[in-house]
Length: 237
Length: 275
Image 1 (cartoon, each protein chain N blue to C red):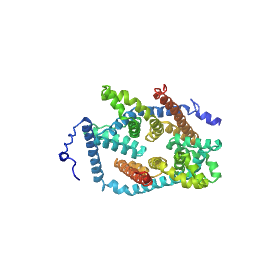
Image 2: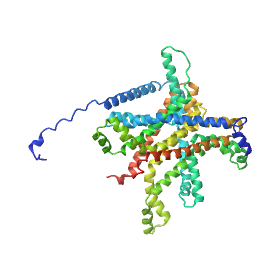
Image 3: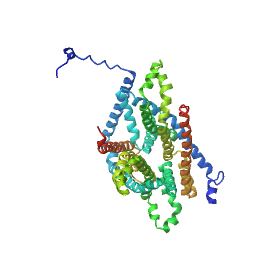
Image 4: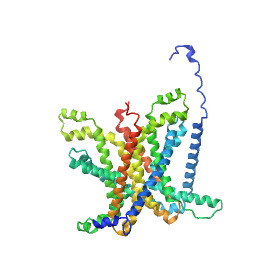
């Protein structure tokens, strides 16, 4: 037991700071992905909710692709695909350099694609939960379409979509672990390095699992606060 | 049919012309983009069907495909068996049963599958002597068994939650009605409750299978040559990006076919609800 504590301590001979750095990378990747995923998901949900069939079809194709591919494969497609694409483009215009895509950015892009395709479904079902009268009311008040969306629809939409989006956030935090495969020094990778050096794999991967659990607990607590905040209008009733 | 009024035979006014709204233009542009990229993908794959890469590696892809199917079906099956006692314990009134089951489900749903697989595959090495003593070391030494074990435990937690949710979804009156008819509890469960629960559980079960197919790609990281593993091997040997594109097409086809089949099954099972 004491041995384990020494291994996990900070500073000389301990792996605490390495693990802490890994946690930082994991959390920042998830947080950096979230706004892009949410925005993209919202735009796609708008397209799916449109009355224009071609727009709906285009959005559905996007969702089908990114929900059908394994996340790991999406990650590899983005990581190697973008690299090869940029290299090809540079060679076309006559520049001969070696490009390496940042694994953090590649992970962010791939996870945002996956997140947005699921988030669009969450937003879409929330759109369906808002009655037409809300749009009509906005129109009757002389609000522009943008203003109706911003002040009438969006606040209700967030409230309706939040439980599903909360689940997606928890999934996103877990999916960041895949980025360790393309070399980003996240929690799983740091734990793996520590495990290999100290020959204590069970301890370090166990710690990694526990950290993910703690992250999930913190997220759930945060989400229930956000949920209460979105429902603050209902409290008066 | 006789027209009530001769005037009604007048032609209907033509539908108003569909205007080129911004949404319509955008939709057509995006569809054009999809069609162009789809066509170029088909052209790219078509022009590579007889390329050295495909000729060399297609048997590997078939093998990988079969390995993926084996991993998924085995772990789903074992997971389904494990999920029964877990779901029963989870919905038990006794806290000595429900608390551990809750912890089990929370652990496996709250941590990444990758970390669980590593924990079992690499972590088993920490207990080598103990495992050798009970004769389980030969089981945990093999990546194949570790992967099946990890995936089965993972999916059993998800399946237990699906099962529990579906059974609790059946109204209490169904139990009472069966009791009033003098049916025993096992008969009530298997003949009255379970069929109704299965209807609710069907969609989440389908999603779980799809999640498992996608998750099984993780097996490639611990040296299993499933579809993803074969893809990575082919890419590392040839540096040909089409390795990943073929894999993407294969995975998309598997998942889409499964989704369609599942929709059919659901339509069939719920046909009495259609009006």
